[in-house]
Length: 203
Ligand SMILES: CC(C)(COP(=O)(O)OP(=O)(O)OC[C@H]1O[C@@H](n2cnc3c(N)ncnc32)[C@H](O)[C@@H]1OP(=O)(O)O)[C@@H](O)C(=O)NCCC(=O)NCCS
Image 1 (cartoon, rainbow, N blue to C red):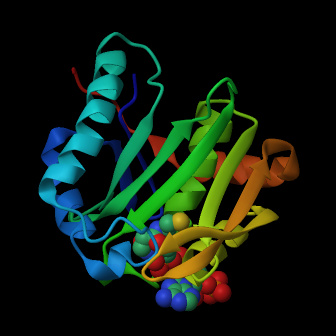
Image 2 (image 1 turned 90 degrees about the horizontal axis):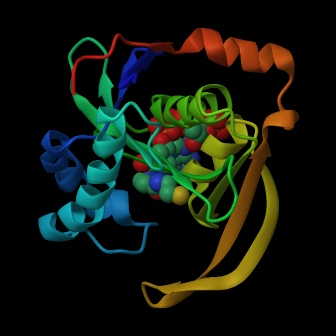
C-alpha cells in the first residue's frame, strides 16, 4: 500500500508514532486550539487520541488493506519540517462518506498550506478512496477554516445555532459538504495531477 503522497511542496504521510511529539507540541498551543474547544492539549491526551488510530492504520497497511481511518502528517517536501496534520474519518454506516479535519502549526498559517491540506483530502477521498461525499464543520468564528473549505468547493449546508458551549459563550456550528459530483471532471483530473503517490517502503 502507498504510505505517502507529494504535492504543492508538501509530503502527506500516514501518521506514525514518531510524529506524535510534533503533533502534541502543535496541539499544546492556545492559538491552534482556539476554535477546537479542547483547550491546549496535554501530551497524554494527544497520544491517547492518536495511538489507536495509528494502530488501526498501520495494521491495515501491513496487511495490504485500505485503513478505515486516514490520518496524515504534513511536512515540507524538501526540508521535512512538520507543518501539521489532516485526516479523513469514516462516517458510520455510510461507505464513501468521510469527515475531514486539519490543524496546522501556527508558524505556517496564511501561506496557503491549509488550502493545500484540504485539497489533498479532497483528492484522497474522491480519487484514491473513490468516495462520493465529504463532510466538514467549523465554529462560525473560525474564518480561516471556513475559507479553506470554501476554497476547496465545499458549500454551507446548514447552521446549528449555539451548538457549542465553550470559553464562557455559545458558538454556532457551520456544516459544510462537498459531493464528488459537485466537481467538474476537469477539476478532478487537475487534482489527480497535483498529487503523486511515493513508492511505498516495507512496513
Ligand atoms: C484553519 C487553518 C488550517 C487554515 O490554514 P492556513 O494555512 O492559514 O490557510 P490558508 O493560508 O490556505 O488560507 C485560507 C483562507 O483563510 C484565510 N485565513 C487564514 N488565516 C486567517 C485568519 N486568522 N483569519 C481570517 N482569515 C484567515 C486566508 O486569508 C485565506 O482566505 P482567502 O481565500 O479569502 O484569502 C489554520 O488556521 C489552523 O490550523 N487553525 C487551527 C486549527 C483549526 O482551527 N482547524 C480547523 C478546525 S475546523
